[in-house]
Image 1: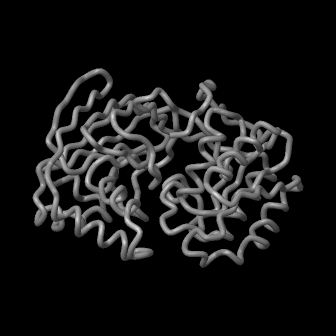
Image 2: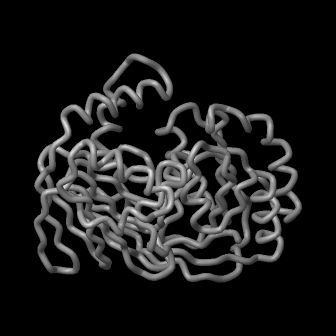
Length: 314
């Protein structure tokens, strides 16, 4: 988990401050299918008449450091060209600052961009961001702040997963074979064979709950995994987190309910419970949570909804 300074998490909406626009691009996002769009994206951002500063990075750690450095060096805005992983890195730098943020979605999932209103087409998103920059227009949205067991702080924009889906991600990340999507599919099969409910303790705005569950998600936005509406009622402007708990599912019932995630109707299943809270304390044994699809923190974790934590270029 990345250490983060404890700046006041408040980014009042208003004109975009003076200064250059930093652009972080991930050419491998979405398996590289949009890698050739960068010149056209930059042309659309340049209509605002601001200096564009292209950030260079070869690794996620370098990208994170480049985002922090850009904010510290006086960037007025940060724009990412990539998927949810790239968004996640950028949010660590802009959260709680007046630096505006724009997402050009070129990844596989693009859940945060979609749920906060950026156009799905990358060039249309770049046009929208360029127009917002030219007009000096921003719109505030909430983020979720995680505090891990070691006291370190990190932010997420979309969804934190801490159940079967996180366990599958952890398995897939440990595997060296096969490559690509097949590795994830194999991890699902392995973990389905080992499926068992885990004991979770949740404290929601100070009220404790305990559950045996196989799915636990905390959403600032509705979707994860490329449009799966795991927290279908989540609203990134309401100052609250949505919590979805899927109880003692067996393998067969879990596979039966999985297609309903795309529509968000899984919350009607009798084994699913939903909650809403400003602060969520979540604990379970031997679980590593994933946020915005990225490996985030071992449990326990405290998650807090932070209203107006960043300003979007929309």
